Image (cartoon, rainbow, N blue to C red; front, side):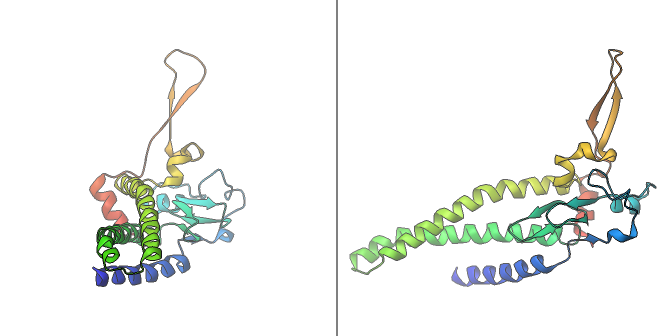
Length: 211
């Protein structure tokens, strides 16, 4: 178990440095007109083939003050945006952190159960036990929020939607479906539609082949 946990930690540290330094998909704004580059619109591509849809999914990140292709969110823990070029690595790291934390919870629980034996042998372990219990509690709290966070991103992958697009879909015209009011009043009801959803299998395949 110690060997497995140490290997997990080494891989997580390597992945952490990679995602902190990796380009998430920054878009060079100089190649587009200033009228097209505003925070309330997608990148200025007017045609509607597959390549232009990918280009239109470039969103503005307030933290990095630039556009990111396939932008999902800005991750303060990693200090970088999560976009098209590092989304797969982000998911691998998220699964890796949860796995490592669960492994540590198992190890800490085993240590706590054996603490009585250490007490009987009069081994000084009070500070060690406090550290084990505090880090165990920390890992439990981490898993409690990372678990639902992982489920949310699995949902996003299955339906080909980004967190930014889901939260702010009213800002992006391609996610708006306008329907006239049945009562005859002069207003239109706007509902959500996802033009990028191609079915779960195709969406997952597209996620696994992100470049």
